[in-house]
Structures are given as C-alpha cells and as structure tokens.
Length: 499
Image (tube, rainbow, N blue to C red):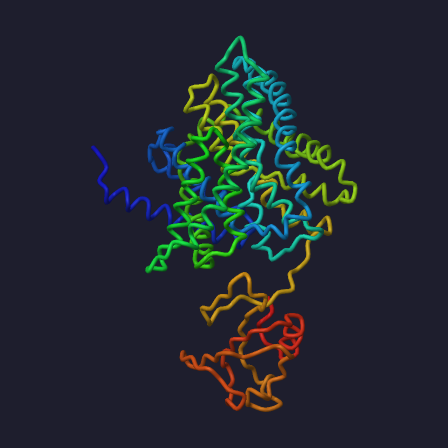
C-alpha cells in the first residue's frame, strides 16, 4: 500500500521534533548532536519502528546537497583575519594530514580485516578506500560541544581546527573518488594519472571557488531587489551555482563551495547579517536531514558481525594513526606546544561526512561496498562516543580551555550589529544595588563610551534621556566600546549580565 503524502509529512515532523529535542539534550550533556540524530534515525529504521529506506541514490543526493550547504555556511562563518596566523598549520593538516591518515589507516585496516574477517578477502586498495572515506574530521560536532560547555581554546587552536575541519573534506572526497577509479581499472591502474587527477581537481576547485565567490559578491551588490527577504535566497543560489559549475569544470565542488563561502562571508554585501542567519538555519536543517537519512539507511543488525574489527580499527585511528599524522605534519612548526598537538590529535572526530563518502562505493557497486559502509558507520559511532563526549574534558585536562569573558547575548531586545561595527551590545536588569546612588539614568555608574539606548518596562519600549527615572526590573539595552570596563561595572552592580 503506497504511503500518503500526509503520512510522510507527519512522520517527518515527528522525526524532526525528536531530533531537535535530541540536539537540545546533546548541548546540555555534552553529547554530539550527530550521535543523537543518528540514533533517532536508527531507532526509526527497519530494525526499529519499521521505516524501510534503502534508496542509495536518494541518500547520496541528500548527503551531497546537505554537505554543500554545511561547507558553504562554515566558510561564511570563518574569519580570514583569525585563520591567517595559522593558515600553514591548518592547510597542512587539511591536505597532507588527510593523505597520511588515509595511508596509515588503510594499512592498519588491511591488517585488521585480514586477521578478523579473512573470508572477506579485502585487498590493500579496498582497505585504502575504506580509510579514505574516514580521513576527514567533523567540525559541527566538535564546536557544538565546546560551545555548549562555554569553553574557549587557547593558542589559536579554535580557528586552526575550524580551518582543518572545514577544508579537509575535499581532500578526503578526491581520495575516495580516485581510489574507486583505481579499483575499477582492476589489473592495470595508472597511479600517476590518478595523482594528476587529484591535483587537478584541487587546483581547479580552489581557483573556481575564489573567482566565483568574488563574482557572487559583485553581483549581489549590483542587483537591486525590492524585496529584501530575497537576498539570502540569492546567496543560496550562488552557493549551489559555485558547487555545480565547478563540477562541470572538472574541479572539486566541495573545496570550491567552502572557499566561495569564505570569500563571500569576508566581503561586504547588502543584507549580510540576514544572509548569515539564514545559512546558520539552513546548515542546521541540512545536518538534521542528513543525519536522519544516514540513520535510516543503516541496518543495526548488520553491524554485529563487524564489532570486533570495527572496535580495533576505531581505537587504532584514535590512539595511533590520527596522532601520528598530526605530529608528523606539525613537525616543522616547532612553536606549537606538545599539548596543542595532543589536543589537535584528539579532535579527530568522525561525523556524517565519512558516512556520506562511504555511500559513494555503494552507488558505484564497488566490491565489498556494504562492508565498507558498515565499518565506517560503526567507527563513526565509536569516535562520537569516545572522542565526542570527552573533548571539553581533554581541553581542560591539557590546560587549553578557558572560560570566555564576554557579555551575555541579548534576550529582551531583537537588535543586531553588522560585523563591521566593533561596538558590542548587551542588556542588563536594573537591581536595587544599581539604584543606590539615585534612580535617574544619569546616576547609573556606567563607564565612558557606554550608552543606554533603550529601556523595556512592562513589555513596552522607549528611548531614555539622562533624566529618565528607572525602576527595579527595568531592562536596559546598552552599547559600549569598552567591554572590559562595562563587565566590571555590571559585576559591581551585581546584575546577571555576564555570561
């Protein structure tokens, strides 16, 4: 009996709601949202609630579009000024680091599978393909955990990890595609040709992303649209265009779309703030849909036979191959401390991207493709459980985490500044201590270069003057150029404004 559209929409609404609740729980308990989203999908699948989903092509399409949006959004949120000091380290980890990880993990996987599942007869090239799909890291899960714990990383580690996580997926993708082509060549693979294709795709992808990103900024600023709500849609259109155009240019679309997002996000264009907020929501929705789809695609009972090799490969990746590749790649950077390199090694968190890449061999009918998919899925779960739940503790243990000294985000005022404006905003509640020296606004002990621009009282808003009489529980919207002084003043007034 065919499913009705209403039933499908109803099921999607329930799954989305459960996933959002799972994500909220993940922020609270420090569990990666990806792990919880995948769990919801698995529990709803054929071995759970009985939802049968086995369409590999649809899953691959969903994964490709979702990853495109996530990478573009990640590029837009990355500040070039922050990554410039650590560009060499991040670039080496995102390219050579991925390659070294794939080689080491491939050799380890070949040995482990030969010892535990000899009947599978996995060749070295197939083992390298398995490793290539798992050679990139997941930034979304890493920083959702760090943000949920309110931790800031020292020594420019955060921008370096953002750069690596945002830009290492293209290298893993190119390695995966190249190894699939080598396997299809069977007895006479041309390794030089494969290496040339890999280099060509990366170069074309980087150039296309830069050029098309610059073109997109110019077009967005020149096109005059009466309906301002269409500008985020226009940016989304360029996101899809950059990815697809690069594909037809024989370049790497994932690298192009990340660099394109980086160029656009660091340029000035009309309605930039609304576009950034739009893509934050789109990236979250893309992750949710992608994780649910991947969870539905796996059959949990198929994971049972590969538990032993999966565990061995997972722990060797966590404790051997990832640390080796990180320390080897960062060897020339002697200013980096041992603790920094150790934490970078631990942030080898696997996420949805390896599972998406593991779908490609399934779609291409590569021998042992289902085994590859199941092992990748299992290793991803282990990585999320072991590394994902311990990232903040590891940062604290290594002495690399510090509590952020920031003003709290606005709660009672829906106002935002452009990134170009360096002033900061916060809101505070008027307490009895704040009124001890008088109840007029001019009596408030605010530091220089600080203004109260709006007051909220009993659900109503008004612009104050210096003679405005304040009452307890008034909400004040404050703009300042001296954040540290304002934080100290707020602390002295014993309000709840600091984060």
